[in-house]
Image (cartoon, rainbow, N blue to C red; front, top):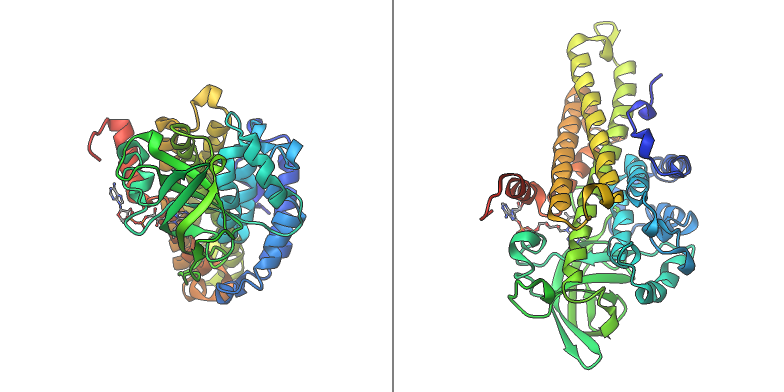
Length: 422
Ligand SMILES: Cc1cc2nc3c(=O)[nH]c(=O)nc-3n(C[C@H](O)[C@H](O)[C@H](O)COP(=O)(O)OP(=O)(O)OC[C@H]3O[C@@H](n4cnc5c(N)ncnc54)[C@H](O)[C@@H]3O)c2cc1C
């Protein structure tokens, strides 16, 4: 019988420890998440059933140490040339069980990428924050606080707007940054994270990249207030909420890099966020394949298994084709991030654009195949016992973040067709 491992992998450029990453994260998915995921929706606020899965994956298996250099207790992926394909593999396997755990797990690494990854390791900040993540078996989260009430897409529209719409301010007072502002929607907000990376401006309205600041803020500091998590259509394992910063003071060296470089490397974060969104989609799609294969083998129509009917087989074939294509694109994107010597810097407009195109391609395909899976399964597709409707609700949400499909389209059109106003 075919399995998800029969979908194509770029075997010539997988990480040297791919088998370990696959086996460990698949074992986690099969034992720690899939048997319990049907209860996650009701647990969106408390996370009682979700928490053990995080603890195992992040704390006990130690995957929250992924990016930190070995000298600080990390796994050292930040200075390897397979952080992309390795990270993709883990996020795909995790998302096969639950793409919300996939995103919560990936986002803990998101701000850390800025300080842990070559060629821009900030050793002082690594030394400061590594113990929080590396010296414990408890799950520890971080968040990237970027989106604001007046619009998240404009803040991510870095090429055109260069941070000019950011309303969260960072003011230098002596040897401290004083931060004021209101963020909303960050993954791992709602009281989950111990550390925020906060997108700020040092001069309101400025489109000078030097005024874009990325500043780390431990969440227990005076002046940091978090709201309650929002209840969403799905993705219960990812908590999102409001965060208010009121005269929050941090040491001046909590700024990730400084004028110009924060902006530059934040683009890299956007590239990685888009690429790993492909992994969340392909993980959900692989599980949809498994669920659909079983359903269409067992359920009969006119005395034959569903899959033996031509019209159904045609749709199943298209679904397998789309999973093949999405996964190949995802691993190719991961490889492009791993080999800047061949494909250009992770923060280049070209790479950011191409990762955006991969993301919105994957979201379109994932939404489409889950919709078709639901059609094939009929009312069983809507039955929570079948697990497919969960992925159907979750993948739609993947499409909405990072500026949604529309910002993806605008950036792709801008880059490939030299548009000037989009
Ligand atoms: C589950 C989840 C997790 C998230 N995680 C994070 C996180 O970790 N950190 C964080 O900071 N934020 C996060 N977000 C927020 C998310 O990134 C934003 O919601 C998203 O970028 C859109 O911003 P907005 O909601 O302010 O909408 P707006 O920016 O106001 O956009 C509204 C609509 O206009 C469209 N649009 C915007 N710009 C253009 C354009 N130039 N051309 C055409 N159409 C355009 C958008 O696609 C959208 O449809 C998350 C959201 C969700 C749902």
